[in-house]
Image (cartoon, rainbow, N blue to C red; front, side):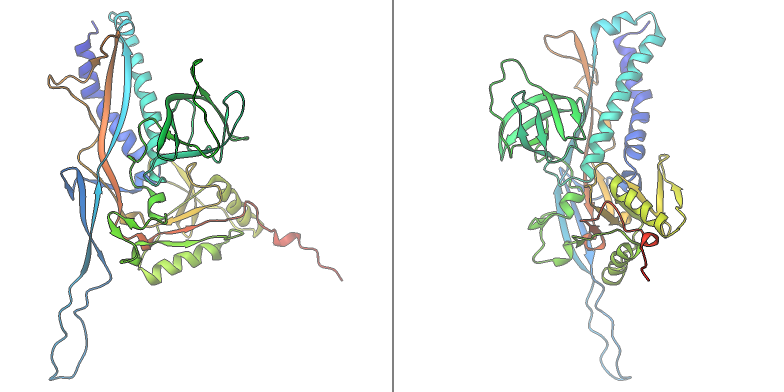
Length: 399
């Protein structure tokens, strides 16, 4: 017979390992390339010594001259708060009782809930990898009379997401669910209650429920114009600013190689991962086809397939801006965590808890982590890439 206790045991012993593996390796191809560790976690913070430059204790001289003066390695301490990441499932008492005498039905019930949790967590964790830590999803550019929202971008939005709406730092309204995203016209349909009376205006911003300012420091943070990174001044340590190129124009091997060469020569960085939007990937495919080049494909961990540039995977990611390409050395990134994914347990050790006043039970998956890049100046971003390229074989030569 299926009971709450057997459900507890299944969540702890069967599903936790599967879910952790899925979220750590298959949630996003970039995440699969980033090492994860509990090292350098102190209390609620990540405190990490990051080396830069080289050891200065070298030199040459005459046979009887003084030896070179010692000048050890240069370090700067990164400090950043661990971010609290949650995923929650809910089971009704009725559904549990209905499957008490049917183990197969109960397994299907749990499988459906866990698959939904993995899908939602994978989407949001992948989104955070390219975010700036603020949790900003989109900016509203228009609101029609039916409260349908037009946004500047919808790449971070998906049906089922529960959102809050802000006017700068003031929360205007929250807890509303997205029912449909028109990705062609960038329109978002949201379920507002019939008594909804708040005014939503152009320029208001959208965040995941209760998440504003609490997400991990993704690539958006590294490539932002913020004065500090991991608590360190960019003005005092200019190497905290990565390589950027704007208004790039048409995609080409030369464009990509110039960024790679710069990183190798200036910071000694070896690029091993390229992320771009699907539009940029199509433009690169078009470029290769225009020059009669073979398109090489490789398979990454998690079953993802990618184009390659000189053996480097070129991965299309839905969370990259339409005109952008990131060139990364993933060896410089670490996901520091207090622990791996765990179920949130009460004092009694239970993970399934009844919602007070409701015939439902919930279980919450939690992870405390922060993403840190040891060498920001070893990374690059190219933006302003055209969606199409000029075909050299269509040029008309007049006599």
